[in-house]
Length: 184
Image (cartoon, rainbow, N blue to C red):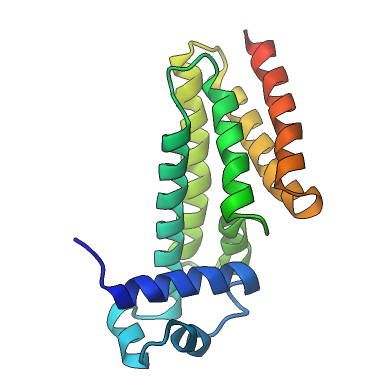
């Protein structure tokens, strides 16, 4: 089912503002004003700010996985390198100021809500993704390799804010090649 144009506008504006200013740095009034909708419109679609954050994170995760799926051929010689390259392009295009999921974990940690679960779930799904790649390639110790690649992607994401996505990705691809060579 297609979402309404107003709901799409709210999600788009909210994601941009949350990404630029953090979850705590943005109020609903600012989102309503920038999305050019009435207050009631927001509350018709989202029961609370937390509910809006949840939807923003779910939408962003969906986009991330679509992005990876469109750039990674699982049956290629080295899907691990393709994942690192795709993640680097994602950082350059969508995540140049750091990771929205880590921010969500930091901002909502221990507050017993779905936001932290969604953000942590995204990281778990990434770990599982690498484990599946390792299993497909018949690599022993797939959990260790998956954790190493997660650390590599997280480090790339963190370094993007310091040295830029292109340089961080360049280093991470070199490291990924080393990891892959040591598993062969």
